[in-house]
Image (cartoon, rainbow, N blue to C red; front, side, top):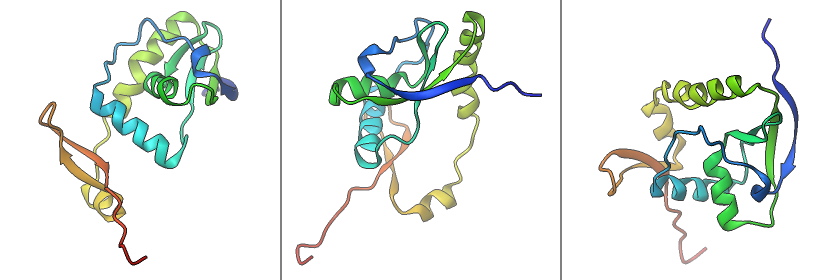
Length: 139
């Protein structure tokens, strides 16, 4: 039987959330911009994950950084989990890499209509970004 490691949820000031010293991901500027745009347009769709036992983030470092820079007085959604320090390191090593194994269904994503493919000037690779909204002057 699988254990539920989630022990609660709530909201917290981003400044009260501790970055994890074992986090190994580096977030480039275009990713900061994409996360800021997504939260600005749609709001919070996914909480950050904090290990209640250690007080450190497991997931959501970039979302927390973006919140610190743009809405410091606003609380952000948090899910609290209970993991040992060893389990916390294991979770850090598994969460993002497992998500990265997923493939993009290009047919489905193009049917969505709200995103488009672009070439990132800073790294030359292809990414998806929100389409620029255009409005007719007559409306």
